[in-house]
Image (cartoon, rainbow, N blue to C red; front, side, top):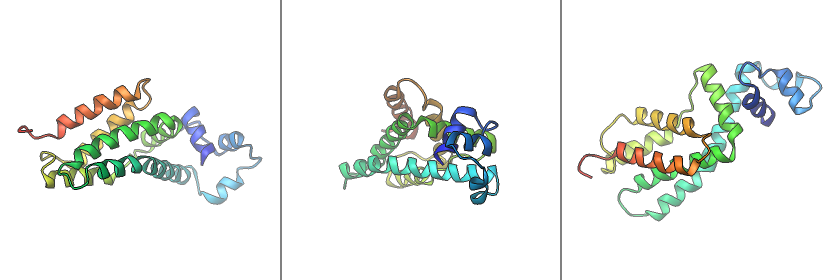
Amino acid sequence: MSATIAVLARRGYAGTTFEAICAHAGLSSKRLISYHFAGKKELLATVGRVVLAEAAAFVRPALDAAANRAAGAQGWERAGLAAYIRASLDFAAARPEHVRALRQIACNTGEQAADGWLAELFEGGQRAGAFREFDAELMSTVLRASIDGVAERLDPEGCADELVEIFDRATRDGSS
């Protein structure tokens, strides 16, 4: 997986072949890869799932901390949203190859990184009155695209501050 991520990040989708992965990993034969994966599509789908699982594991402690800080308080969802944005950009800064690999997969297969948890956060926040009414799936998609779009910027903290502000405003109702 790590060799595939590295090759995807450096050479792009078209340049990611079993041969290139083997060369990067120091394998003498592509049979080890083809034994486990029927083809490039299956391998890259697995890489996508692995990267998303790693990102979720990275982000989860920040979300748990936000929920614990706001325990019992109404509107923890706003703190959770800010924590999600900041932790997602921290993951991108810590693992830029993972983010580039995932972007290559999405751009070349049309399979976007789905984050059901984020849509659930938005829907729960709407039910609790912390967020205005909007299409939670659309807002999730726009937020994910925004995070992915700025993930490789030189100032992830500045980007995080700006995205937190943008999405805080985008999710507030007019009376807040």
